[in-house]
Image (cartoon, rainbow, N blue to C red; front, side, top):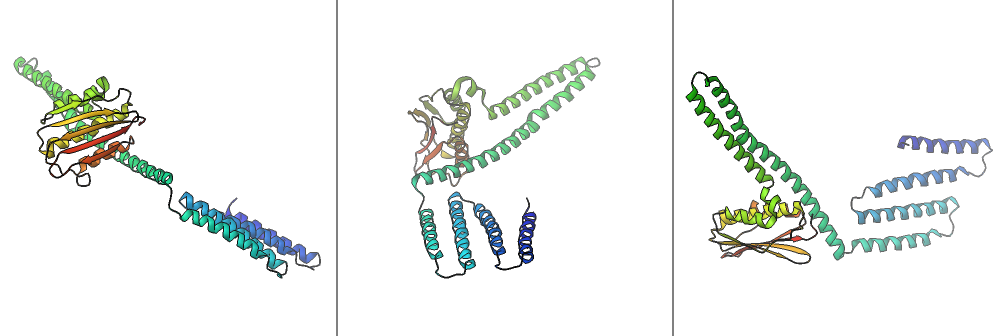
Length: 331
């Protein structure tokens, strides 16, 4: 039922009651009670709609309480007026409702407890991580599209053209056709290398085949800075958690190689009953700050998605220690 329909129905009911009072000989104006009932219903609906628009849950319950108290107080005052006034008995109702509403306001205005703060922080983290995951996914898709377009696709187009030229020369110039076929073979190998690079940037095969520990060891072998890997992560981590941890460690080691000036680094895996810790340490110049660089912020974004945490200790003279803490039940 729409608002216009409800309003029309209420007005019709009031008019009908008034007409009936006129037809039955007037006397005491009893239609006022019809007006009272209709007005109470309309006021209650209006107050309820306004209360439900309050965004936060704590404030919304307070608004609902205030709406109920206002409706009861208005009804009592109206009844007192319609019954001829006299002793102002609604004051006891108003006193009780004011006490209830005041206590509720006091409870809402108190600082939230530790559990509520934890839940609020958790909600903010989930909101931030969801937004970050969506942004990273869009950026990752654009990067993959760009890499395929500029790399493998361009090489495959060149391969098709080369094979076409070789087909034209195969009867007229066998030596020239052979050279073109050799060039086509080299182009095909390069295209496969490009595709393999793109695939590894999405999900390294070694991570799926041998797990997080060996994947990090393979990653360390390709760095210019010597990296020692100690310990092993648990083998029961979910694939999504292993992927996020792998790329977080890869980003940390990339920062070591590019910015720290370090001559050696270590990656240490440690685990307890509840958490898995990965510490990336280097002997570089230090001074790493997540607020100043996109690399560490990127790690934080990846870790938020699996409810993991990043802690950076990097005094000005070094060393730098990046600790990744992952809950065992993450993912």
